Length: 152
Image 1 (cartoon, rainbow, N blue to C red):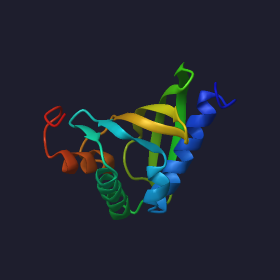
Image 2: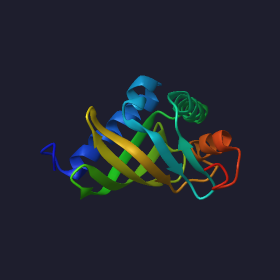
Image 3: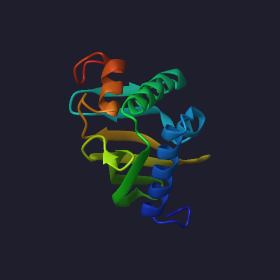
Image 4: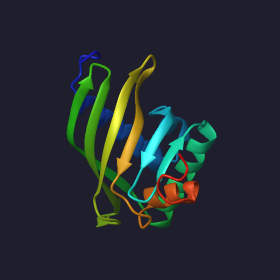
């Protein structure tokens, strides 16, 4: 525990930061939460984001998808977070995407790897239980334009 915080506390801060960045359409804040290269996976798609421009394009597609669905809140609940190593956390969280008091999509489980860098904690990989029916899956599929595994 190099920062003096529990793995869960670190992940909960990251979840709040990334949710706020999406809702505020703040790429700078979102980008500060991720490291490159970044591995993103769904059942249908596997991507390795290697440039800030690629990350920006993914972010813009994600925000656009949420705006189209009228998303007003992203509630993320950390189910489990543990240190794999002193500077590596593996976590599972569930995202609840809301438009007012209505759920927009089914709850979305995500497994993430978060690592400590000189400038703070950053997400290095995320596995989404998503299809192209939800904004994150659709944003990834548009970027990949390929079935799972063909672009890595």
